[in-house]
Amino acid sequence: MQRIIFATGNVGKMREIKMILADLLIDGETVEVLSMKEAGIEADIVEDGITFSENAAIKAKAVAAMAPDAIVMADDSGLEVDYLNKEPGIYSARYLGEDTPYSEKNANIIVRLSGVPVEERSARFVCAIAAALPGGELLESLETIEGYIGYEERGERGFGYDPIFMVPSYQKSTAELTEEEKNEISHRGKALRSMKVQLQEYYS
Image (cartoon, rainbow, N blue to C red; front, side, top):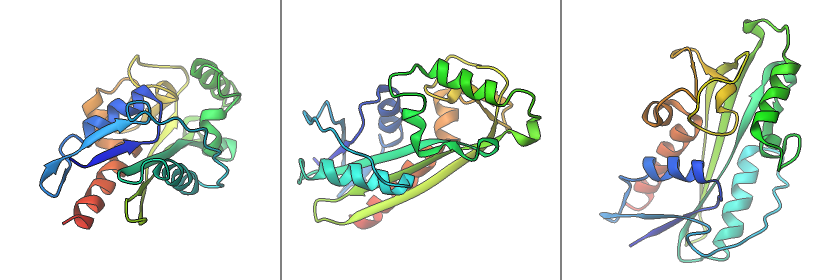
């Protein structure tokens, strides 16, 4: 059975990834999708790229060096707020410090947008995914979801910046959507489905 090791320790992210890749077939067989922890891999990777795509590739290649027989996938994703010059951007996970709770990060963004009208609160989630294949090839995908920053945290689902990111078509935050609704429209859902197609075409 082919293994995919996803270079993340984020439990919420892994749950989304496993749901979306559940029906992936390679050479007619289902694929085992593992987190780094589940694969027994520990790595302290320096993400020094200047774009989401560069950082995803850096992570995928670093872990692939430790698991040469597996497909290694990595993503770099984050929130871009137009009014804040696209902050926090590639620093989304490290915004205000890596160990700062997202409730504080979200509150900080809401305060910085105090008094800003809804039409100027445009934002997007961005997700870049890289897949390092056993032969050395690298596949890449990049997707976004457009929305705006709400005026307060809303919803109990999701993680990270989900409670403040509003999806216009639903008039809900991504933390108010069901997992199925979110995976259908999210940046990560779209990037994973694009990567799934690329993998199936590569191995067909």
